[in-house]
Image 1: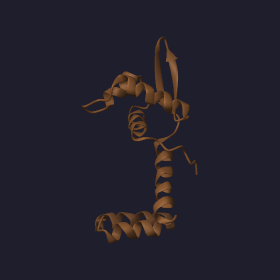
Image 2: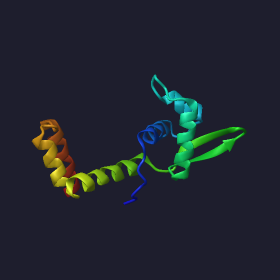
Image 3: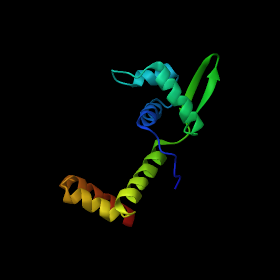
Image 4: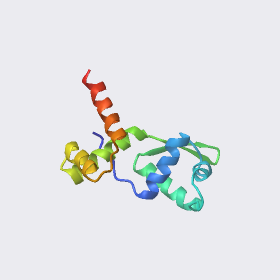
Amino acid sequence: MSDFKNLTKAEEQVMQALWEIEAGTTHQILDFFEVPKPHYNTVSTVLKILVDKNFVSFKQVGKTNIYHPLVPKTDYSKDSIMQVVRNYFGGSFTRMFSAFVSEDKLSLKDMEQIQKELDKHKK
């Protein structure tokens, strides 16, 4: 497990944009956001923080930086889920699953899909 540094909401939003577009300038990342868009300087600052946290790198082309993610979305997603399971369910996926079932947050279709995944991995 990677145990990535926690990201703020703003950092995660910028990462979501970068994961979607794969690489881009600050303006291209800004274009990904819906209205109301954050200010250019805000996105630029967040990108610098993400570079410092080793989530993002960049290549300078002339006066422009082209940013790209260093951390794959799947790796960060898995790590985030593991943190939730550890912090809120004592490290137990059974407890997490039970919490969702008891609160009627999983449909029968969801549970059938989960069962299919489990059956697939048994083989």
